[in-house]
Amino acid sequence: MLAGQTAIITGASRGIGKAVAYKLAEQGVKLSLIGSSEEIYTVKEELVQRGYEVLAFQVDVSSEEGVQQVVTETLKAFGSIDILLNNAGIGVFKTVEETNVEEWKRLFEVNVQGVFVCAKAVVPHMKARKAGTIITISSDVGRYTIPNGAAYTATKYAVQGFSGSLAQEMREYGVRVGTINPGMVDTYFAGGTQGVPEKQEWIKVDDVASAVVYMASAPKHLIIDEIVLHPLIQNYPIA
Image 1 (cartoon, rainbow, N blue to C red):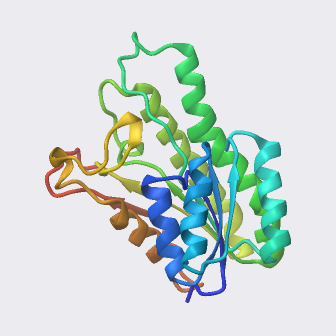
Image 2 (cartoon, rainbow, N blue to C red):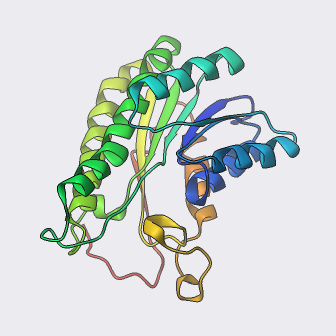
């Protein structure tokens, strides 16, 4: 169902974004990958060696100029953008008192402004084609609050609000907008290490990637507004 489509994936250097890149490539999707470090070019080469069509860009997702260049180059190379996956994100987990203004600003630049900038860049193309899917990897803390994470939690509440409003704007054009909200994921997020024993029962990046494929593959008449994923071991409030 996804074969021949084109996807832009942010935060694709490793973790969830890289897993989604592999999963979509296996489905026959052409990829345009965005990462904040040179690692993104390594991911591209790995995928190209497997025979997949891939572009890669080292770009800050909060940069409107940089993201617009990605969109321009993607359309030039592949002719369309069918899927946008907003995955890039950072985390700072401190008390409000310990969190400084620069950390607050940077969290909002990447986690919120990045989502806005990337969505805004693809919207005109998707509206004109009357087709497209915009998916944002948010978090379960976009549904409830946690201590020692006020800044991060605030960004995820903002993402939920933005995505919900955008979904209403885009519905008449046949463009679908949804969020995937994972709980504890075994990844490198917030300076963590992937694959350590204490994360053995956490959600795996492939689990999240499968949810992305499921959301993007839904029949055209169907919108999946939200998917929430938790490992069985995680205790969390019921929203």
